[in-house]
Amino acid sequence: MATRHSSGLSPRDMKQQLLDKARARRTQTTARVADDAGDDMFASKPTPLQISDDFVRFDRQPGYQQLSMMQQAGAAFGVPEPFFRVHEGCAGATTRIDGRELVNFASYNYLDYSRHPEVIKAAAEAAAHYGTSVSASRAVSGERPIHRELEAAVARTYEVEDAVVFVSGHATNVSTLGYLLGPKDLILHDEWIHNSSLVGAQLSGARRMPFAHNDPDALEALLSSQRGKFERVLIVTEGLYSMDGDVPDLPRLIALKQQYRCWLMVDEAHSFGVLGERGLGLREHFDIDAHDVDIWMGTMSKTLSGCGGYIAGCKELVSMLRYFAPGFLYSVGMPAQVAAPPLKILELLQGDDARQRIARLHAVSGYFLTRARALGLDVGDSLGVAVVPVILGSSLVAARLSNQLFEAGFNVQPILHPAVPEKSARLRFFLSCEHTEAQVDAVLETLIQQLSDIKAGL
Image (cartoon, rainbow, N blue to C red; front, side):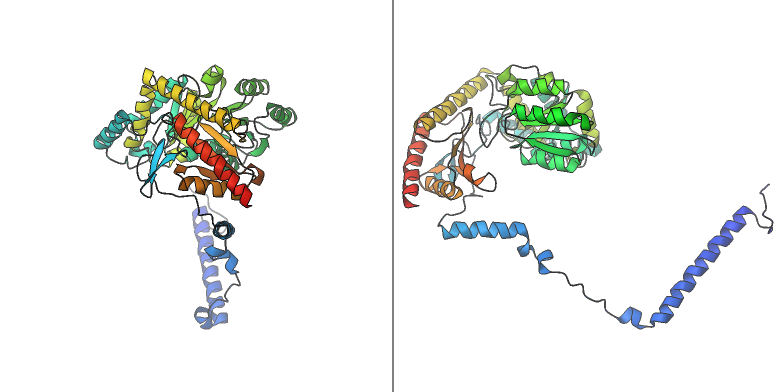
């Protein structure tokens, strides 16, 4: 039997009575406010806020202002913008732009697999079988057998337990770092690490500290002073730096991560398919066990001739990312025709033809490095495999030289301030296994002549 209060009401009746009184009070308050304001309360217009156009108009935003200044400066110095040129076919050692065939040093198609007949056939057959989109996130209804086949092939190649592929290479780093780390953690990264890792570190909320480029001593100093202040600590490096063409001291980084009980992540966007006799990347270059690195990351858009990224490692890491990493969980699954080329290339990399392509890439890259140094050009610390910069020290000189090389039949992209410090402005040369020594000689001879003319005119 329900207990009754001294007033004679049950607890349920008392609760209902309190609710009724509260509703009555709200109704009376609303009516009183309306009476006080009169009909004008609904007829009057709100006073406009005084908000500056700087916060409303897109042409007043800092990014657009910076872009406008750069474009105006280029026009003032007679240097056309070198970006967003349209390539009219497959870009490899040569390309076609505006109806002209040029020798191309601005493509990541290192082993020239993007036009390989078997790779193209695999993409076409996958699209015919699965359609052009899987039309959903993989967790919901976008999972296809080709996804698991590709992930299994990546894991076998790295000789680790599992792998997961993301639809975007940039999002692979953003989502992985953003999910794995938090406010009580620390991310230590090379100062020249890719933007995707920087954005992922910022998203995570972890403390972020850069160390001097390829300087393990600087990293050790940070670990010695900071490791005990944080829970999880992640060291992030790249396998082959696309700005400088150099590599980190991986054995030393492994020793440091073991000594200080950290995770180590290697971004192999440019090193996989390039370093080592079999193209297995930084671990083959240094002959280390894949398990000594906690997180292997790579992209599908360079040697693997597709699009997207992957994480390879232990099954626990991969399982977490499959179920919780936002860039995977909430993104559409990789289209089958995008997954098929990397899957086919991972198979091709096991054959003799792949080794010949890698050997040709190493040979022509090394030839470029040797010839550039002999001509007195500053190539920094480049290893001479696939990526060789020519450091010029002036954004204006780099932009002008890029344009003049373009007019002479060579496509080479400049890297200008603020992407790099002004003193480090450069041209970046990306080599393909299909480049020839004659093409290297021709571009370097033209570069030296044009550089001399530019300096004479300044």
